[in-house]
Amino acid sequence: MMTILLVEDDKNIVSHLSAFLAGEGFAVHSAAGQSDALGMLAEHAVDLVLLDVSLADGNGFATCRAVKSEYGLPVIFLTASDDEFSTVTGFELGADDYIAKPFRPRELVSRIKNILRLTKSGGGVVHLGNVTVDTVKGTAQKDGRDLFLSALEYRLLLVFLNNRGHLLSRAQLLDALWDAAGEFVNDNTLTVYIKRLREKIEDDPQSPTLIKTVRGLGYKVDV
Image (tube, rainbow, N blue to C red; front, side, top):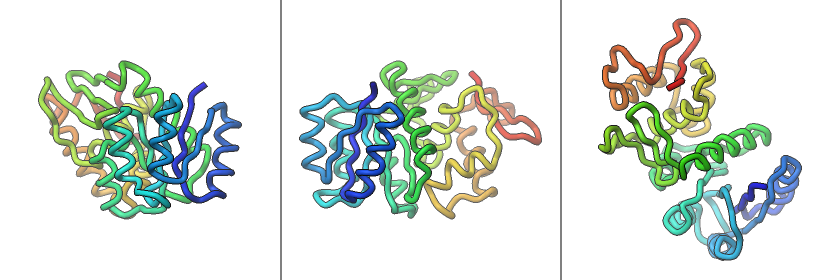
């Protein structure tokens, strides 16, 4: 059974979300603030951390930094903050995903399972052709050289990795990025980000072999 640490100071959210996650087969521990969360991690084996940005004690960004540096665990930010600054800061600290409140519980469970599947295979290291993604450190390299992906480029790459072998429509990609950046991402900017990502990971961006276009339908990664 996978164990989740929910770091949230809203008692109603803790109560309802803990019950829902338990019903989905997860063991759940909860903490209201940074010190309680780190104390809990020192005492219990945890597979993933669900983390709010605004906490009664400390803040989610500092907690994420400590969780990543001390325990190397996957982190999903669960917060009402949907501004670009919070998103970029979270991903720069190594967050694995970001979902804004209010959220659909089953979507959250799907995100959790995707992240756990990625991080439990190869110790968090995932390969896509000659690209290596370390989902624990939140880094991506090609042939051993850092790709220096932006927060949204990294998020887009994770979306493709989470759905390897599946066709993704532009609408599905927009939905996945919407939670990370609110109105910052629209159809035009999606085109730009796919182009930028291809320029960094493909050997020949004009003839992509990693992120393939399925004309009229969307995109697919199946390497």
